[in-house]
Image (cartoon, rainbow, N blue to C red):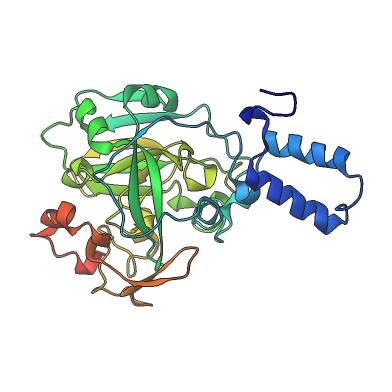
Length: 322
């Protein structure tokens, strides 16, 4: 390496450079001797965060992509996904990244309880070591009709279920999120008795190959607005089923209550399977809009995963509990 070359580790990422340059231009520093401020911005960005709250210092996760899960659309831009999401513990708006600065995701423990032979309490770091990580490209569809395609990193939920060894009486899983009113402002407002966020699956759904516990996104640890450090991903269901920031998975012998079915039972049910033929009471589900491009597409039954999950519902009428 010549004395005029820099090692790759010292190069400023393009996203940080563009964000910093835009800021300096707005302040009128372009064309002036602004290097001291430029360096200060560089140091700040390297230690804190870049645009839309995607943390620069999020750890990279080494995971092999699973080729069994392919897409019919391009991946959503990372910054588009980072800047538009739902996490009602923090805000009712989409720019969740603006509201998660106080949210602490380390240390973090996940409890496996209920009707199992082997109850477990594991830290997120123990989970990462215990279960090999893989990358899967999934479609994601919100009940609000926006959609994206993202590369999740994590492991099959079935692997954790098998390790816990559910009893023969177990029929469902109840999943519970955190309760931290000092860090999540919306948990102290409205119907506070509904918190923490809670969701549920049948045991066959949890054992399905698609059910996934995500620890990362776009090759790095999950950003807080996406449910760090551990979230459920069920790509054949509307997004509100994919509970974020999980702290407990409880095995039970009955269908558990869920957050949205408790809040608005006339609009949201236990199953939440994506179905263009079953409209939401206030809007159609026949089409979806891709995040970023704005492209309109026809909604696919079970989000295009009919082949993997359709058999689960042959004897179940899910129309009234979508």
